[in-house]
Length: 504
Image (cartoon, rainbow, N blue to C red; front, side, top):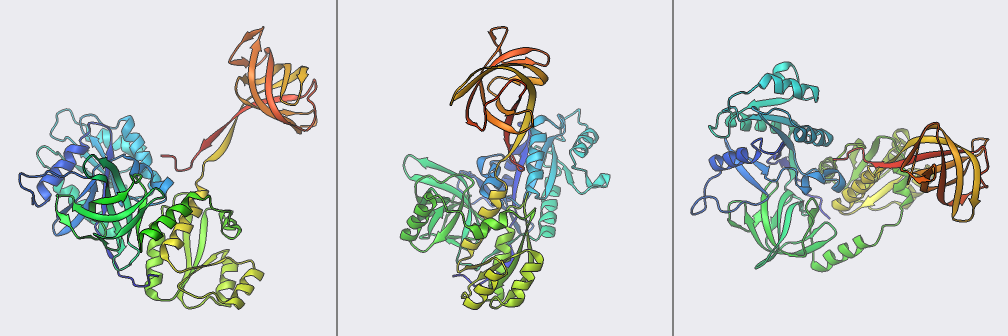
């Protein structure tokens, strides 16, 4: 159990996105070559998934693979893998389709967004047109009265690059990006992972909390674990430890971790194996936690803990969970055992009580059950945050939406058995689509059968669709029938589409 806390500012993690050939790599190379202390013979020889620079005495970490799987997995993994996003737009080409896609991804994360207008050394630039196009995408420059920082620069001449770095520092300072430096529950995320023919599995990681050391045993997602045999910095140095915000390459995992997965330090390889084995078993539905899923848009939490340090660490850890569709709202936080006042407050706010480092009180357990209040006890912070993260991920599961194509009035039913129905009818609305799903409603409007169109014919010819006003023959594959369809019933042709609110 970790109760110590030293929440402090950490270097911001920045990712750069935009259209291909708009200068992302050139900008990153320029920043790195001019800002990193060259400690390698012959210049830069290492180039891992991210790197850290020091500018005006302050460190900042850049993710050097914009758009890669780790970043696209922000919501599906439930972890924030960046603090600031920079959208790159070339001054001579302007906003392109990939720029628009990058902006939509960036907006979905709800992270601070900056814009770097690159290639200002080129001719035929039109910055005002770019700013106008970005304004239509809800990125309005500060110059135009908006809140989006936009910097004009050239990665060839270096003009404006210092201004960009200064603005990154300013945005980071305002955002107060923090980490728990003292926790013994060290964690972070996997940027990239691959197999080296000589060394085996290598992973590029960034530490988020705690201190990662050579010899630590880590679990990465639900696929890999191992003891860190070697740790290498972004400039090739062999390191013994890494702190929050620091990118490193590690050797020692038994298996290739998934990009975008989180990792955490555990006590032993036996514990790591147990965690992975548990992950392979589908979790049973927890009716207590499941009840929280029904709450709308906001998860209200009352925090109780054994110390102020624990409260700070938990609040910080909950803040690291990506919250887009569902928000976490901490109603109150207090040191001490769960009491009747907490239970009354939970009733008023429809909140769950999360108790950390505390012993369960049988009397309060009875009161909470009687009052239908959820109280969960934890001894490890990562177990608390994992459970809340999983809960929020359930809320962002694919939503099934229905798209109706059209309606047909049944004229005659030719065949009806246990597995199929063959019928003829006339399309009265929209169109009927082959391979679409169908509902059949009786003349009282009740659904009596459901299935899928397997064959569709018009004038004895196979067709993919039949439009309004035309007659057709249909074969439906079905196994759900409450009663037999008859002439006069209505067939509705439709599709089901899975969409995610945060689809990237």
